Image 1 (cartoon, one colour):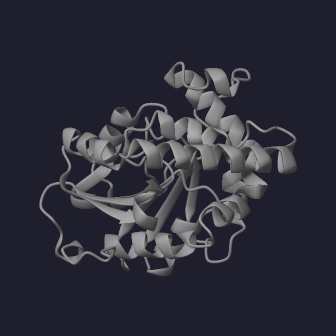
Image 2 (tube, one colour):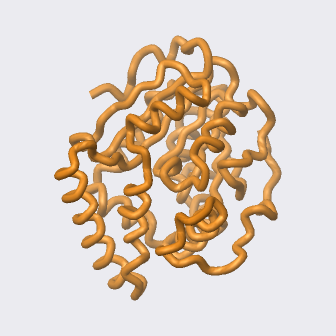
Image 3 (cartoon, one colour):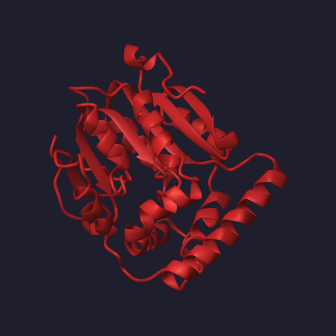
Length: 265
């Protein structure tokens, strides 16, 4: 599986969008996310480790194990970033394609150990450059929250998955409790402001995380959107006391390798 390389015309950066306007339209969010992740690419691994208290590596391993990916599996890692999940899929013998909207992320991913056989492609999750039913496994880490149009992206994932295929997603959750949610968002805003100013002289840089969470439907909402897109056996696995979540979903009949929940706990 070798999707075409190069950045599609519909994700070219056509001007700067500020955080206050980043969510006005899908096009604004697409431009903002691409510029943001280009800015933070070299700091991305540090930030994910810092904000997860160093636990993100274990979460990503659980995510990949839950897919049942193995030698012969065709895997697509969306919003692949610097390649952590793609790297783990490749280590299990899967034929892996890593897709990201930000070329700077892909350059870093290509240089990561264990990623030499991964095929990297710059692309948009709402318009995947793959044929129908061409992969067995789709993964994404922190991708669904950042996509400009979540229902369209889920529809695209469903399209490229073969019947019996698995979708697995790791992302922040939006706590249902109003008090917990406000405290959580306030913490992320404060930490994000400090990190943004310290690392980039721009406090808005990591304020994007709580801003995106305010507009994110949360784990239960995402599960509902997955079902609306046609997925079955949709499961939510709470992580870090429910502040994070893993979503698992199948297209059609559940493959035997995925009936054991590798992410339970």
